Amino acid sequence: EAGVVQSPRYKIIEKKQPVAFWCNPISGHNTLYWYRQNLGQGPELLIRYENEEAVDDSQLPKDRFSAERLKGVDSTLKIQPAELGDSAVYLCASSRRRGQGANEQFFGPGTRLTVL
Amino acid sequence: SQQGEEDPQALSIQEGENATMNCSYKTSINNLQWYRQNSGRGLVHLILIRSNEREKHSGRLRVTLDTSKKSSSLLITASRAADTASYFCATGPYNQGGKLIFGQGTELSVKP
Image 1 (cartoon, rainbow over the protein chains, first blue to last red):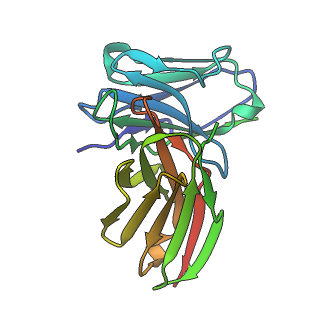
Image 2: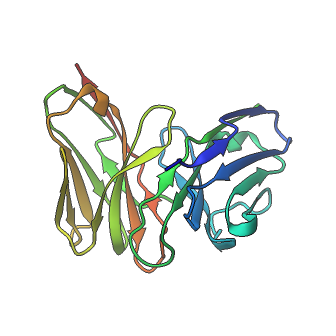
Image 3: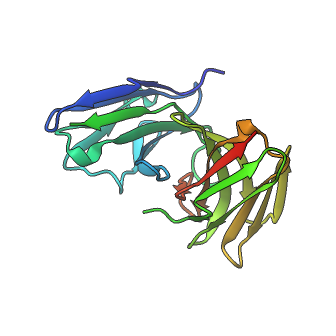
């Protein structure tokens, strides 16, 4: 099966500019995750979708970050305006099952964002 | 916030040796998973162990889980240069659906 697709792979912007990342999950996966990974750290969850509903966005800095998953398939994550501290790798992941239980997550290659 | 703490932060071994990485966590869990990340790439799932399991094997991987100590270990036997990567444990908190909380990772270097 095709993996999780993310674009762009790299993005360099100046602070205060907007930026958007796109993710297409594995076909049939109804759960989608956005993570941020800082250098030398593990991924930290930003938002989790079950179909088109955001069921956990407690870690999303809502003053500047927004996300959407229209039609419950692909998703976009936006930052506006970007700050220097937003430089990180943004990972998208998807999984098969919703709700309780153990879910293996499949990760995309990530978007490396550099804010100058 | 990251729940897991991994030990050691970095590990360097020779090809053929075994590598052991440890993970400790804080809250009750449904499951614990281990992922590998090669430089500049996304994470790849290695193995999942449920809270009612104590040990699990997959090829050269062996995972143990001690819920009383809130700890897990990952053993890679007969390591290869291709095992060089960062390894992360991720816990699935109890009653929080499919959420995973990742540790900071162990950077493994296997020298040929």
